[in-house]
Length: 374
Image (cartoon, rainbow, N blue to C red; front, side, top):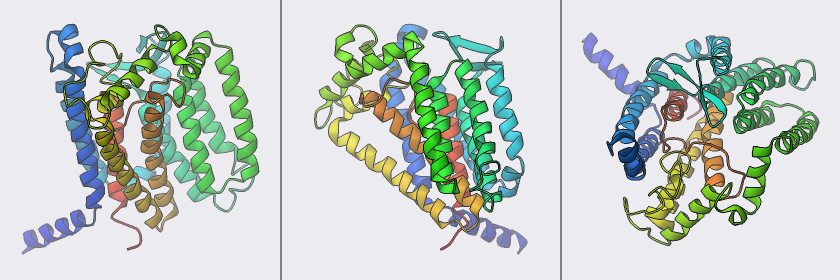
C-alpha cells in the first residue's frame, strides 16, 4: 500500500514537469551528439588516431550533463536558493584559479583550469551563479530597487568584480555576456531606466576603449567589418563559415558530406559547429533547428511567466537568458553579424563545461515548471 502510494506520488511529481521542454532538451542534446560525430572525425583521426575521440568524450559529457539535469530537477528549490552566496563564492574562486598555475593557457588566454583529468571553464558556471545572486537580490529588494545605493550599486559591483576577473584572463567576450545578463535581469527586476541608460553609455565607451587599446581585439573588429579583405588572416574563420553556409544551399550536402570541416574551418566541432550544420543540412535543416531552439525558448519563458514567487520568476528568466544569449551570440558570430568571439552553441558545441551548464539550466527550468500558475 505504502509502495503504491509512493509510486503514485512519484508519477504525479514527474507528470508536473514540462514534457515539451524536456523533449526539446533531449532532442537538442541528441542532435549535438550527431553533429559532433559528423564534424570532428577528420580532426580527431589526425590528432589522436581515433576518429571517434571527440564523439566519445562528448558522449561522456552528455551523460554527466543529463545526471546534473536530473539532480537539478529533483533538488528542493530552498536548497538551491539557500546556497546562493556559496555559488557566487565558488565562481569567484574558480575564476581566480584561472590566473594561477592551475590555469591552462591557450592562445595567450587562461580561461580554463585543470582539476586532475578534468578541464573546467569557470565562466559557464559563473553565469549560473550570477543569475542565482541577481534573482535573490531583486526578489528581496523590490521595495528599494529604484534607489541608487541599494537597488543599483550591489548587483553592479558583484557583476563588475566577476567581469574584472574575466578581463584579467583575458576574456572580453565572457565579460560582455555577464554584463548582458545583468542588463536583462535589471530590466525585469525594476532598476530605474535612467541608471541602465547611463550604465550602457559608460559600458559602451569602456568596451570601445578595450577594443582599440588591444591590437588583437582591434584586428578582430576590422576583420568582422570586412572579412574577405583579410581572408587568409584574421578573417579566415568567418570567410570559411560563410562559404560553408553558401555550400549548403537549400537541402545541404548531407550528414557527413561537408567539406569545410576538412581542415578549412578551425574549431569545426566547437564554436563554428553551426557552419557545419548549415553546410550539411542546408536552409531546410537550419530552419528546423531554428524552430527547435525557438520552441525551447518559448517553453522556458513560459515557465518564467507562470511563476508566482518572484525569486522563481527571476531565476527562470535568468537561466533562460543564459541559453538565449549563447544561442543568439553563437549564430551571430558564425553568420558574421557580430565580431568573432568564442561562444559555444548550447547543447550542440563540443565541450564539457558548456554542455553541462546547459543541462543544468534545463534542469532548473524543469524543476520550476512544477510550480506556478496553471
